Image (cartoon, rainbow, N blue to C red; front, side, top):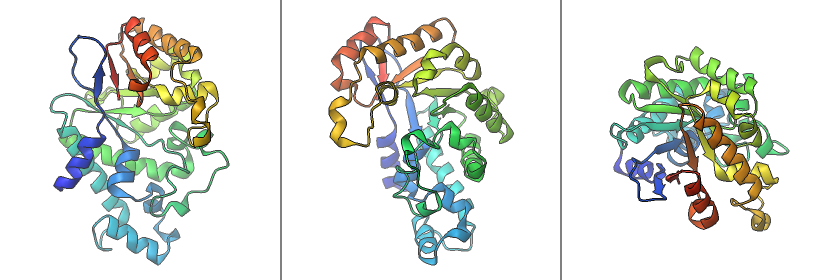
Length: 294
């Protein structure tokens, strides 16, 4: 692992912003999408379908993975991803590192080497992403590589926990939990905790049932706002519509906080732009939330 990679990882780990005078340990979250995009640069589907790639793309992928073609590209991908996870977990010491499974849509992954193997979608934001892709038969090999990298990393980093992103329904929740178990990442086994990233209104409306599948929630404020208000965050001309302080959003977040308040499970709040949302910040303090992951 080079110093440059370690610096990149440190920058990509999220930290918590303190909202009140109370002390609390920082929460570390790293996204597999970010690791793949910034430290690997290769589309996960490409390494599962090397026969579909051009000679030029194949050569570029081996260059990106800093290896020759004597080792299968899938093995190179898993090895590098697991090393990145181990390095990220080490920065947390004894504190847990929450690793978010892949959730980027096809548009967001279109810049990666080998992206041509993934079909374009008419509406990527609403398409195969998060749990729907993890559970889709066409992406099963990609999911298996993802799980293998995590399993290898957990041999050295027991503090790794999992976060399942973009779960639309109970059936998706159950399917992903079952698939993780099939891949040797069984919730509860070897102290493995699995959280759910709350990104769509159904997560709040049906929170008590979703909680039965997971060890806690992480609320992605900006994603939840996007789907609550029908926003398109990729359309920069509509940025004026973004509103993380909308009353509808506050109602949904309150529902999530209330549901976990009735259980012994945590509900963490994740916001990339909390400093631009003073009303939301004050409101969270009124709800008893002292820290926001950013």
